[in-house]
Length: 249
Image (cartoon, rainbow, N blue to C red; front, top):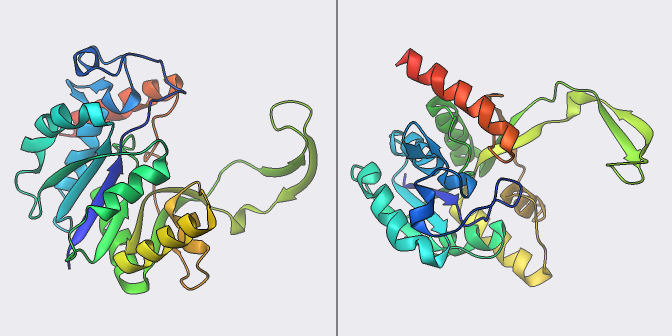
């Protein structure tokens, strides 16, 4: 079974501190979130290392901005030397969906399973990667998710201000979607084709597959450590997790 992972990393990080997109600026660790530094390496590198360490992963594809392709290739080449299908760095799009689709279209025909993972989720566990890939191989589609711990309210009006509670939603039937999200290649391909035909933009890959109404998406329980580093406040928690991981090693 040949399994590829796609890491969309072309975002500008508008919710994080803004910086110049030039490669030279990334060395300060204060630019786009996927290139911010932890323990001397960008977050993207830490994420790539997790998948490169998985014996199930045969191909790694990273989607970045056009001007970043060359130096990201140099940055990641040594991390992926032992990966069977190697590393490909491709030009992403203006949205996550476009970036993932472009990376998907670059995959070799021999790929059977495609995983999509946020480039800024560097704390994914190897066991979780294995579980979600195994589930997708068996059923066709699987995502990682966690059960919400907070009470969830359905509201009307603007969420930020002036919202009114209309109902309390049972957490027993809710999960918070994480990544990886993993699919048989032909299923994800059909989902992209349908989305393009209908001009549909989803919030994740699972939402594209759900629209097909042909495959049920399974959920593999993940971990609350599998955070997505999106806002400045996430950096403090990420540093704590990195320190804990370093101490265990």
